[in-house]
Image (cartoon, rainbow over all chains, first blue to last red; front, side):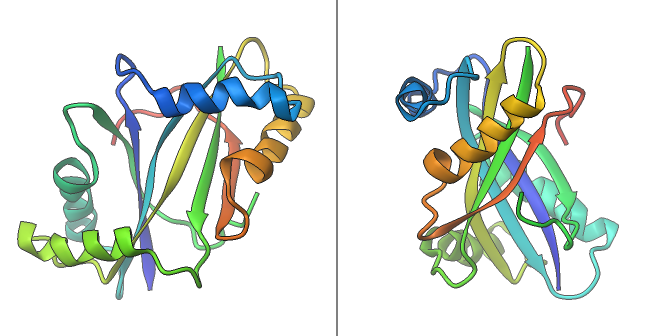
Length: 88
Length: 88
């Protein structure tokens, strides 16, 4: 099994109240290094077998048509996941 | 300004109804290459000035304490964003 990652973020000009709320709360937890927080979405698509160019193209098209609401969001990245990507 | 990306995904053993619903809808859009979809969160943290080890450590700690609900989610990755990361 292989995986493709799709990353979607709100467009820069779009207000992100959730991100603002999180950013305002961070100092209460002692985190003061950040001036802004924006929250988007990260999808993992599982593929049985190899990820061919056609499969990756399908993921990019699905990203634009299904995973992102392109009126208010941008598809930031679509890439084949490196299965060794450990937890930070 | 620099940015740190925090990626959070539901733990593998946790049911992801949203991901399941998306996966079930994909064939209706003509996308048949994927056997599963899981949806997580992607945060962008803005930092004024350079990202020092201390700032990155703060982001990792905030990831575990604020951005992820570690009962049901894993912090997948915390990294300094490459500002040239273009749209896919």
